[in-house]
Length: 429
Image 1: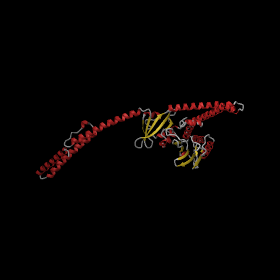
Image 2: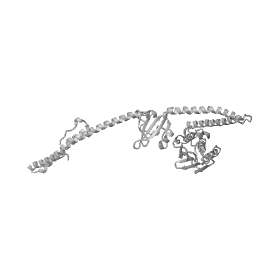
Image 3: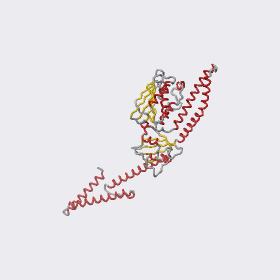
Image 4: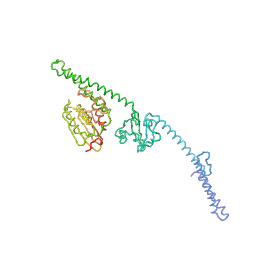
């Protein structure tokens, strides 16, 4: 026990004994002890009153001095108050620095709660989303960003890491939105202005589309003259090989132009409407027949249709997806190989797979094979007439149908290309 409490108890005991002795003089020792106890109680109540007043005012000048055990109590409380005050100053300084740093961010940041209500945001987010300081805090973010792609992303952010939408204020501003878990039951919405990149992409896409469109006419004329020259029985025999090679190269250029035009159309479009039913079995059968006329056809295509459920979308684009995947499998599968086309439906959606036993590709090539003109085996693709745009067309056509392309492959062991369609893209059975 601390000495101060020992001394306090000793003084109280001494006072009670003294009170009892004085009361004994008047034949009432209990009364004497009661008076002493009441006096001690009154003294402690008085000090409690002083303590309460001091805690209320918080003024250092009002610190009571006290007596007995009270001075250490007052000193301890003063120490705790001073420490808490210093800690509060450090916390406020830290919050101020953190707020200043977030205000300096060029990207917008919005803190959302579990109900997607706005808790806080920085100045960049206020400018990008045109937020009102008083009216928009506490609003649900989907009431401000009403784009369908963002609403779908908000419901399932794990399905894709980022979504790109036009700014709510309109104009040519485009935003990249990314959701990150932040704190307990909170989410951080990162917003970046990507208008410049979108503008550059649009200029590039328009240039490619315009240039490809302008190339179609001269290529058609050249192809016509070459066909006429090739059919001329009186042409010199020395011209036969050059004319045939020129015809092949012009046809290859024509296919390249057609693929560039189709890719530009797919890149510039939004999601396809869900008002048309496309027969999956019809797509697969047409792709299978077309594959039989391709050079280097392995001769073995197996079709496995395990569901009668069809897809909602654009038939020509979905046919391009299946045809490109099957043609790609034929191109990289040797004569003794096998190609399997399958269609399955489960609770997660529909899955169209094209699996081959061809040459496969390395893990380093898989993330890049959907890039324009990228070839995992450039020499073989050029010899077989590939343009290098087939998988890019597949990627953007699937994106217009809210679907994803999964690629699995191992070098020397074949490849699997799986198109995953969401449930809302499946036709009612």
